[in-house]
Length: 454
Image (cartoon, rainbow, N blue to C red):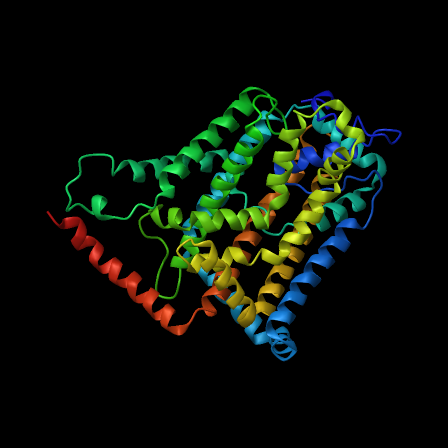
């Protein structure tokens, strides 16, 4: 996909000259969720955004907890170490999460790299970036930008086409079990099937079909559009629905890995279907630039060329350049919602209440968890870019640097999500915790008897 097929909104700008860095940053964000500077010269834009996001999260924690509790939790080093150990233990007991997400991601991204190995536009993009930035400036700038999106991989798992197809088939199988002439005494007939199940498998199938058509049609990095006006709303919705269900699956696995449980039982997507509504909202609030960019790009195909000189054109240029990073920095205030909804039945109101309770009881530790996740994501990403971009310019180098940065940030995102789930569980009332653990053990004990009932 060449420069001529990009939205014409930048070409219609009244300012002299053409900023080729803004379309490049947009294409990299849409293709691989790689946040990069849309400016021609290196700057500290990402650093100020990251510091502002971290400061805002700590300020919210201070307002929610009060100064005494805020300071007490902030300097509770043993408590922070205990949280880190519990998050690692929770993730270790959820071995299936780590194996499936990392394994399928490696396969999917390796396939994508193979398909685009000889794409000459990769060399052109790398030469364009290196023209105004040294290797160190490139590494630091990309590392700081990655720190602004610490949970980008766990909130956008539908970017893995293989995982998207497999989970869609699993949900379809579960929903189809009730379509047959089942005995009323069978476990399949008595098991609850939330109404979102059919919507989810159809949405996953449609989004997977859209992705396959985009690959077959050579759509390139930007979303495939310019077909029907309805895709402006439909494609972002399908994307958010797929991301939300896969996030719900992660949360169900992490929630099940509590003390005394292994988190490696039979794979049943029903609990994830139940959590899908709130998880979809968490993806929309935690990674808003992903869906806004897709919707605005799709809408731009239907706009007349004269819109570039209007206020709408100026907004679109800002939204598809600096606005992406600004949205992601603002999303830090609600990143903790992803951990809170794990302890609900998928209701949006209940998820917000649990999130508010977590802020009041564990707000400082939540803010510190997000800050450390951002720092770790930024440091590892900067190291990856420093090592990979030091290679001679080739068509595959820039795409490989983006992919390896995701390889490094995915485990960090999983660990941060496990810590958020742990903090949300701590904030639950004691009676709720006892009831949930007892219900899970009762269900595990009665499941074999239910399956053997004639």
